[in-house]
Structure formats: structure tokens, C-alpha cells
Amino acid sequence: MVDELDELLTKRAEPQARSHLAEKIIAASLEGRGQKSKAGGFDLAGWFGALADEFLLPRPALAMAVFLVLGLFAGMNIETPTDEVGEDLVSYLFVDESFDTGDWL
Image (cartoon, rainbow, N blue to C red; front, side):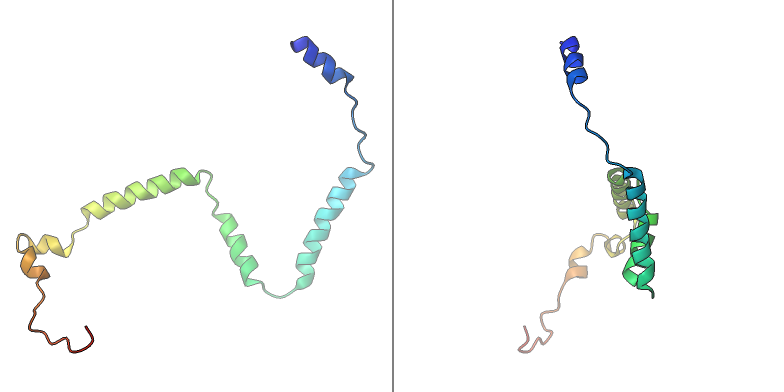
């Protein structure tokens, strides 16, 4: 089977490369750069885009998982007002019904 594949690949004709293809690619890339510089002025969106490109993460899923785990760990270790109240949570959450709400409620 491998021999058949090799035979098919050797029989296949190679397409001719375009003349001066490398020069055309280089010229097109330089032309694109020239258009950016010709616009002139300060481009805030372009500046933020370039800044965001500096902070690319090689493994975004891993970074997100680490931040989630750190966030959960920090959330469990931060003291909340309910820690100070203790067992008297009902009085902490009690709403005085004698408060006049008027017509807005």
C-alpha cells in the first residue's frame, strides 16, 4: 500500500511556481505597512490593539483555570460581614417593618 502511494505521488505533476512570487509577497507586505504610516495621526484603537498583542497568553485555558482556582481560594479566605455577626444572622438581616416606604414600594 505504501508503494502504491509513493508511485501515485511520483506520477503526480508538480504545478509551476509563479515567477517572482517571493518578490510579490514582500512588496505586498511593505505596501500594507506604507498605508498605515501614510494615514498619519494617532490611532487610539490601533494603539490599544498593539498593547493587547503584547499580552498574548500562550495557553489561555490554563491561565483562566489558574485565575479561577486563585479566585475561589481567595473568596473562601476573605472575611465577610456575616463572620462578624456569627449566629445572630437573623437580626443582621432583619428589616424594620415600621419603616415608612410610602408609595414607591
